[in-house]
Each structure stands twice: as C-alpha cells, then as structure tokens.
Image 1 (cartoon, rainbow, N blue to C red):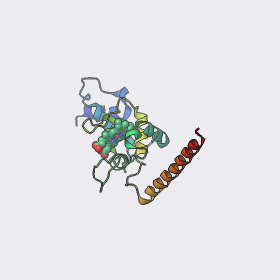
Image 2 (spheres, rainbow, N blue to C red; image 1 turned 60 degrees about the horizontal axis):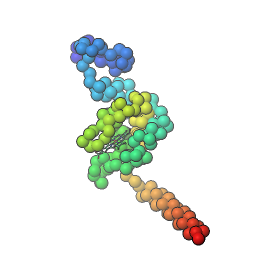
Image 3 (cartoon, protein in one colour; image 1 turned 45 degrees about the vertical axis):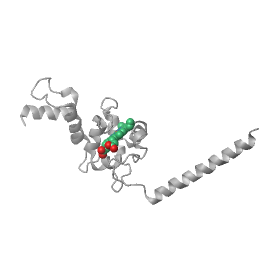
Length: 172
Ligand code: HEC
C-alpha cells in the first residue's frame, strides 16, 4: 500500500480521530466501517480473538439494557443459525467470530432486523458489551439447566396459588 496511505491508516486506527487524514488527501480513503473494524483488530483483540480491556460487569448491565430485550439475558432467546440441531447464539458469535459480532453491533443488518448501534452506544461501552457477550453461553440449555427452570417455575406457581387462595378467602 502507498506509504502515505499506510501512515494515515496506522495513525487513524491507533491514534484516533485527532490524527485523521485531511479530507480528500491520499490517506482519506477509509470508510466508517473500515475504521471501526480496524480498531477492533488492531486495538481490542488478543491472539485468541478475545476482547482486551473490557469491563464485563459494566458490559453485563449495558447488555441487559440494550440487547437482552431481543436476545435474552443469556443471549439464547434467538437461535441465529435457525437450525435446532446446531444452534448459534449471540454468545457463540461473540466468542467464535468477534469481528462478525462487532460488525453487527455497530452497523446492524436491515434485512435480518438487527439495528445499527454505531450512533447510539459509545465506543467504550461497546467494548464492555463485546467483552461480556464473549462470556455468554454457547451451548443449548442442558438437561440440568432445564430442571432448574422447571423447579423455579413450580415454586412460582405454588406461590401464585397460595396468594390467590388468600385473596379469595379474604374477599367478601
Ligand atoms: C429490537 C431487537 C434487537 C435488539 C434490541 C438487539 N438485537 Fe441483535 N439481532 C436482532 C435480530 C432480529 C437479529 C437477526 C436474527 C436472525 O437473523 O435470525 C440480530 C442479530 C444480531 C447479531 C448477529 C449474530 C450472528 O451470528 O449473525 C449480533 C452480533 C447482534 N444481534 C448483537 C446485538 C447486540 C450486541 C445488541 C445490543 C447492543 C443487540 N444485538 C440488540 C434483534 C435485536
């Protein structure tokens, strides 16, 4: 690549907007998408594709607020592969394909119905969300997990019935 371009690319990606090439100059060729993806690759990923420097406790809160309404609190509400025998959750994508996760979170996919968050969520918060998302489950619910859910549901049902009984006994 031309030297001017390489220098501009490096400074843009590693030093941030302050060193961005002058509009119209030889280095001014990167799209917004290029810059965001390069930022991930150069600054955030370790050699195993894990996000460095994420505050996962903050990421958890941000994920619950922004992403859980659709993807579920453990990321398994949506099976992205649409194949029941080989499910893929948002946790799978974050862990196994961080660039795909990063691209989708930033730029979305209007055909599939995923919103772009580039203008909504600041970069520092996205890093935390991505780090947290890598800790989400990547396997389907196990029998043990299903049993825990069943037991919780039984407890809630019993509690609801107890309260209904009290209120019907107390109504005139
Ligand atoms: C309004 C609902 C909604 C919200 C909120 C939402 N998503 Fe999505 N997301 C979707 C839909 C729909 C898809 C595409 C599902 C499909 O293709 O089956 C998707 C797909 C994705 C994918 C693609 C995964 C893959 O392997 O293809 C990623 C990554 C993703 N979302 C991340 C996020 C993150 C991170 C957040 C929070 C910042 C978020 N989403 C919030 C609806 C949502």
